[in-house]
Every structure is written in structure tokens, then in C-alpha cells.
Length: 104
Image (cartoon, rainbow, N blue to C red; front, side, top):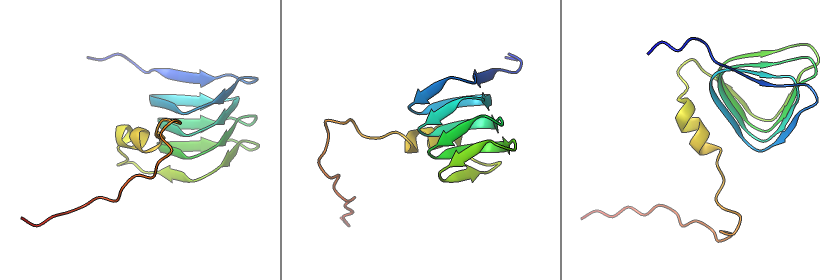
């Protein structure tokens, strides 16, 4: 199953309000207000991210901005990280109960 390299480009002048996921190369030339999860992420000089950024490889060019928690790890589980960034539905405003353990 060799599919070659895939690339996601968020072009300059493009703004996204939401979470992004890519298991290949992601080049950010525009802006993201949300969480970004990717294998390799390059934030170009005019690019910006306001949110959590999780990846295996990160490059930020001079002028590029990342405002939020950054996790870079070669052993990062990207699918697991994607699920961690998802929020509960907006209509579900109740508090989630703590996990309960019982010894039976």
C-alpha cells in the first residue's frame, strides 16, 4: 500500500475555526483557531495557530506564531491525540461524572 507522500496546505489568507488532523505533512500558511494534530507540521512565516498543536515533527519559520500548548514526540499516537482534542457537543453542558471503580 505505498501511496506516496500526502500534503495538506492551509494557504495564506485562509482562516479556519476548528480542529485539523493530518497523518502526513501539514503546511500552515494561513490561520487556525483550534487544535492541530499532524505527523509533520510546518508553520510558515505568515502562518499562525491559536490552540493545542500535537505532532511528531515541527518547524516554525521566523514570523510564524503558535499560541498554545505544543507537544512534539516521535512516539506520539496521533489518532489518540485527535480524540483528546474533541470537545463534547455544545448542547451537553452538564458536568461529566468522575470515573468510579469498584472492587467485587
